[in-house]
Image: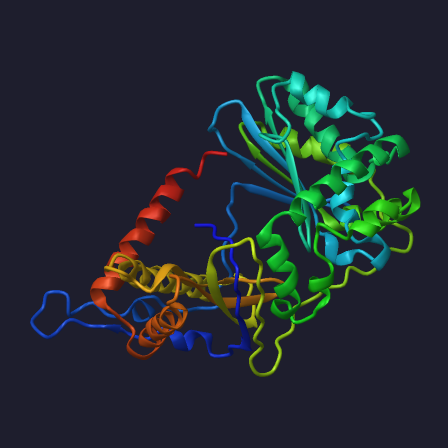
Length: 425
C-alpha cells in the first residue's frame, strides 16, 4: 500500500542489538502435540560458511575491470534480459552536476557512437522492444542500471543488444541539440514532481532522515537551477569520470548459448578504457546521530496524518550462511508482527487506517527497523500508542508457536514458488 502523507514524525536512533527484538517462540503447554518443536534458531546451525554461487552462473572479469554474469535459462523460450550496471549514481555528482547522473541516463537514449540521435530507440521498436514498457533505465544514489529485454530467436537482433550496451557503457554522444531538447523534458519532470504533495513533504524530512549526510543533498532528480544552466563540458565530465569499465557490470540471463554470450561480451566490451587517472569511487554512508531526532512536516493538500519511526543501525551484507539465516529470521519476524497489525485493522473502529513495521535495507550502508501508522482523524495519539505497544509486546514476549508455524509455512511456499521459477528469466 502506497500512502502519501501530511504529517511525518521521524525518530532516528542507533539500534545496536537488533537481534534482541527476536524474542523466543513460545511453546504450547505440555501435552500439546505442538509442544515438542524447538525454536528455529536452535534447529538451524548458524555458521560462517560462505554462501555458494550458482554453478550455472558464469562470472568473469575483463582486463579493463568490467565484470560479467551469465545465466542460461530456458524459459521463457527465445527471450533474454540484458543489463548494464554502473556503480555510479547521484551520490558522485559535484555541486555543479546535481541531477546530471539522471540526465546522463536520458542522454544514453538520445545518441551514441553507433546509434545517432533516435536511431537506437527506433531500431529496438522495429525489433519489438517497446521503450518504457520493456526498454528502461533507472538512476539511484549509488548506481545506474540499464535494462534491455530482447528476443533470441533472431541472432542479429540479440547480438546487436551487446553493441547497444557497449555504446551506453562508453560511447554516449551528448549532441548539443539533443541535450537541449532533453533539458526541457527533465525540467517538466521536475515541475510535475513539485505538484506532488508527497514530494514536497519528502523535501522537508529527508535532511533529518538522512542525518544531513551527502545523500540528503544528492537526490537523483537534481536541482532545477543546475538542470537549466549546466554546459556540455559539465555532463561530459560526469560521464567520463564515472562510466568506466572498472565500475561496470554486464548481466545476461535468458534462452541462449552462454559460451557465445561470453564471447560477445569479451568482443564488445574489452576495448572500453578506464581514465588515465581515475577518480576514487568514494563509498558514502548515512551516519547515525546520538539521541532521537524528531521532524514535523505538513502540507495542506494531503488529508492523512502519518507517523513514521525509523531506527537505524549498521547494515550487513549477506555473504555467509549465518547472514542468510539472519535474513530469514528478519523475514519471519516481519511476517508475524505485521500479521498482528493486520488483525488490529480488522477490528471495529481501529485507531489507524494502515500500519506496518519491518526490518530492511535503508540507504548508505544502513539497515533500519521502520514502523509507520496512518491515524484515523482525531486518533493520532491512540494510533501511535497502539503501534508502539505491539512492537514492545513482540520484543518482550515474542510470538506463539502457532504464529511462527504460520509464518514459516508462508515462507516455505514463497521459497518453493521461487525455486519452481529458477529456470525462467
